[in-house]
Length: 516
Image (cartoon, rainbow, N blue to C red; front, side):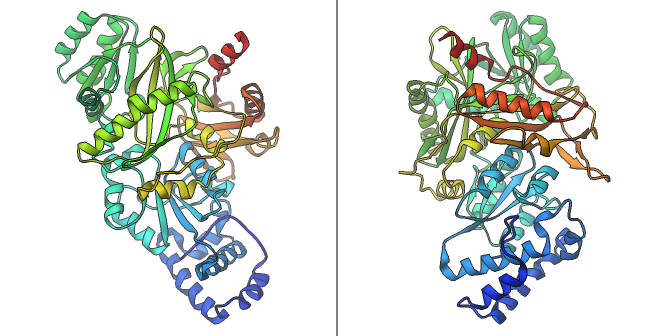
């Protein structure tokens, strides 16, 4: 098994001396190392080039490299069953997953493709920036060369494209659904039809490909109303129209102007549900499902939940709106019928089901707004810092259909993440703005972690913004107030004139607590 990770131990000379004493001879170790080092001839993995760029490739510093190789060889002698994990993706969600996997006792090493500068710099994973994650053959070759025992697919696009299909077919344990099962997120029409067929509560809806027909339906239903692109639109394909004019504009944007390309060639028009949104996550192995802790995110760009929808401007966990009784009801009425329905449709779901819910104001009951087939971002950040179980083993069990009887351990208290985004997001935004004092931010208070979603390093060694949502400043606390205070204390430490953030993350839960 080829294993490279950031974790360091004794210097190389001590390792050589220690390994001479192992049951395998040092000569054999040298031969083994020769086999592994030859793999560095792949593209940018050439050993010399990695050593020559320490800022981007800290995990490959020579002593650390020898350390982990020798440790992995020792573990191959049967000391313990450990696995190497490849995380697919390069955003804040993937950084959080890498961070949790790095803490997993059974995880030998974590790779992330393509990753980002923050993931690499933090040492949470070894980033393979030139691995083409849209090329299943390339991903499969990497897994075989490096002894990868589990692939965790972060974003939805590779799942919809069938990456999990190809990996599973080749015998690589993969956490993530097949392309057929990923249609739960890839097509809102597919999801709505499944709800109809299996009695899963959701908003009333109609689908359209003709703009005139869609507008006639909207006129009949009235406003407010919701217009959604059927396909994947990077979290931006949902428009909550408060007036008929806004709804008509949304229809034209998708069906006439093709603003979302092929994702918007069909739209779903659905009723506006009034209430409180919440995020519900469950790990699924095709038959069994186990819930994760509750979380709630903030989709609107501005304070007080104002402005356009975004991919998420912050989140907290747990979410008081999801009581234990409601969580049980969601499992019974939404998650388990979905798992059963997908199985009966011939496309068993393996991965994480992320149910976007509306807890209706009138009835107090949950309805399904949409499904995502991967961890939410930024909810993943608060969930991963609270998770105390061995994530690698849990996800491996799900990929093998062995979740029955598995339980999860969570840290007490709360966690909050505040997203820092580039000025102008979710519209056009400037790239390349310099971000400073990130390391200082992680030390202003206990239990603070800055997850990177869209960063790179410039020629001067500075972090720069490359995306819309750029950082997820995350903190834990004994309660939500403490988590909030720590998160914003860290945010205030960061020097980034080119970014902005919401000041009221968690306001619903905190207001409820203050009232009670």
